Image (cartoon, rainbow, N blue to C red; front, side, top):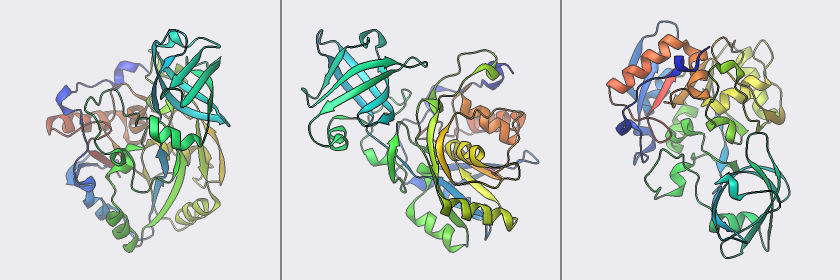
Amino acid sequence: MDLKEFYYDLPEELIAQEPLKERDKSRLLVLKKETGEMEHKIFYEIINYMNEGDCLVLNNTKVIPARLIGEREDTRGTIEFVLLNRIKGNIWEVLVKPGRRAKLGKNFIFGDGLLKARVIDYTEAGGRIVEFSYEGIFEEILDQLGEMPVPPYIKKKLEEKDRYQTVYAKFPGSAAAPTAGLHFTAELLEKIKEKGVKIAYITLHVGLGTFRPVKVREIEKHKMHAEYYEISQETADIINNTKKEGKRLFAVGTTTTRTLETVSDPKGFVTAKKGFTDLFIYPGYKFKAIDALITNFHLPESTLIMLVCAFAGKEKVMRSYEEAVKNRYRFFSFGDAMLIV
């Protein structure tokens, strides 16, 4: 399958530069999977598409202030680190920019030496393995020195850090937010519960796999970067009971979808487990677990739009994106949402 098949024209002014004041007032494009029919709604109306006994699955990862600006100890050249994945203890996998400054054995300092790092290895994906040294508590130092790693297409400074977190974020570890969840408020989740919809949580720490661009023409040759996930026994039980009752599973976001599809058997029943997933979902993939998908509008030629096309059909999805552009929807991380049902 050719990469160009997943391209669409997007006027730059439709890339949302900041979140709306009220999370659940985003617009919602509803796409009926079977017919291709579309409806234009407001996000809080999503409750009308859920029935008693259905299950809403959310990713409760928390974004860490993973972007660090520092300098090389010997040359004082500026360096940017983005923390991707804690390997163990103080050893992390990071993205570096510019890479030429981060050679093996080189030392870096952040915050006038409050935090130091040494490059100890390279990764296959072009990143670095570094070992940090510091006095005190790493998370507190990171809160002090780090910035929220908002995507590069967001040029405007994020005024409130919390707006790049879901209201149910719990377990720190992500280098990017699971953005489909940004639209939910505590009040909306409470109303969904009151309707008799079950709510379950998985954890997938969003890393390079989610936002790394596809650089090969034949998409089948693209290799996803592995990301850490956990699914508890409690969550597995809730999901499996939903399946047994013949009710639907609503996945909030591509990260939740990839986790559920990773741990499910051919009938869609899931197993409690933890580990790393590098599952790449593109058209032709047969979904086992999820019945409905809540997602944002994704970059052209990204693995995310490929997953959405796999779920709803490429022609229907690309047509819905044209409709969204025509109707001036807001795109990407701080943009509007889509429900495929």
